[in-house]
Image: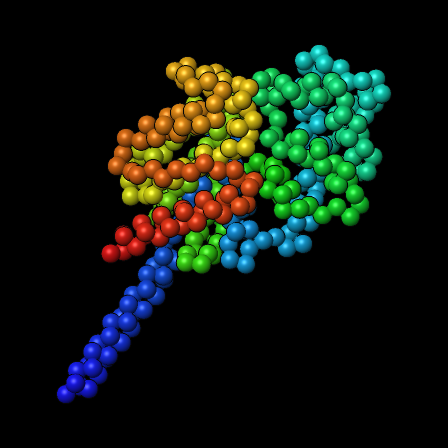
Length: 350
């Protein structure tokens, strides 16, 4: 009799185990079908860099040699384009380059846009100009007097490597290269316990009308905020502060009826650049009620609260401080994001 009881218990246990396995498989299929992440935020907040990082940190992720090579002329174009910005700004500000660099400056200014104009001689001219005292002074006025890509100095500092004949962009180059997002980029990413579709859309005002096409069946929104842009204005509207524009945009998104049941995740991005800037530029230039001085912790906490205060819905806002070009940081943060998404999706199922 005892054996019969044991056998029945064993049978029941197997049946329960089988049912649990079936349910887990069903859950996995549902999650695979339903998880859709939307990357939103104002222009140059780091959305596209986060998108690139997903390709790196996913299962069996990374860039092939061919994929890295496809960025070569984009890097060249960034180097030429950003030096043209510096030279144009220098002219407007009445800052002269050294006599021995004037021919190089004139040559760069007359190059056609994009990386197709690149030659080794162009690389040498860019190196000479980057060392020029006039360009150094002009660079110190970026954000205050003119707009320049965050990654400009990175590429100029690596010109020796970039101008080599066998140059192959590194993963760091790919993460930092700037290509303005237009339209909608979409890709499927696979992680250990979740597969999801991520959509990256352009953040400039002219691109936002396209966002509506992505709003259907969104599982979660990752809203990116550039911490370091509190003293900068929009490229498309120099009367509007970038961080205040981001605040207005976040208020609109997190309280939208479209996203009543959507998980909301805030990425306070560019912590590296913010750390450098806050030691010199008081956050008071953006928020008059800030009293924390040139202190990273006080300033970052103040900004976080400003954004959380925009939420008047029933949303729980999950927030993280990120450095989008740092793969280790993004991998760590995204592990936490995946746990949050998994709990929320399974909660909806049951």
